[in-house]
Image 1 (cartoon, rainbow, N blue to C red):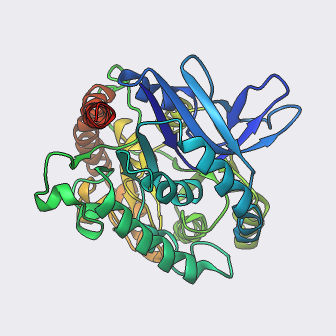
Image 2 (tube, helix red, strand yellow):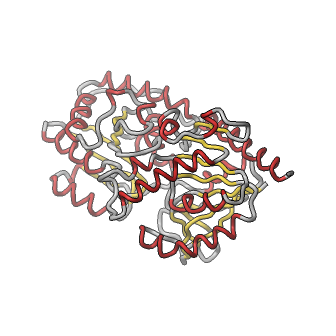
Length: 401
């Protein structure tokens, strides 16, 4: 059976028809669905290019195929291409007996209602809370308040209408965007909880023992520098405060995007350019984890998430993690490791508390590994496969009439 999958992201098709992506949706991601389905077909916003931009990852491969719609970045371009995109989507969905939509997302939000009208089974994977994602200060867009309202309302509707709903959190997203399965509906409705993170079973190292040292290195990772929601400015303000109090710290940012120069300029304005480095976009989660492994703590003052993969990746490396109490993060970090995303003084205090106590750093690192072990790939793959199999079985039953 063929599966239609609709993720988000920006894709590129080169002259040889190879498909590349800027984000996490590489071939390894799409091949997860091949554990249950014979082939995977993805509707994606794709731009034709002579050669994929540097740092992009190959998305296509055996069993994974793509159905392109016009590329768009921003509200204006999306509206401009909406008619053509909808026309293509209506044509594409006729060929599939079931589908999975990763919501919320620009493409998935457009495609899911079209597929729903076919009366065929479909599922959604809920990956973020749009109410928090589009909160004030996260993105610079004139339509942000309207997008926030629309996407939140859409997510509530689609979760109640879909046959299957999976959530990246254990409780948070379920409470805000409930589905019929949670309300005890019939057998054709089902739900699951699993993260999108990829933590190979053999990647966990023994816990680290931290000791006093001269310089402490702080890591932060966000794939695309397209907004202010991941707390780059808050972390730099906190680092400035920590340095001013006499501690030697360095911050390493992973990621790239249109706001790179703004972030570099901000470090200069604070007078800490020599203590801040930008490592660019890395090819995969393993490379990100290697960077984190060589630092002393991971600090992530994010404004909105579902359950951030990068926090789990950092936890699996046995480093202390400080983040914000939003969405699903309190499910994996204790209250003493949570600070409001705008509170740079609070982050400075938390960083210094760790620097002053190697024993505390060691204890948090050990705890983080224990929690992250519950998100090993082997465990999550079993949960995903069970969810996919329920959708396939329902689609086969419907197809038989």
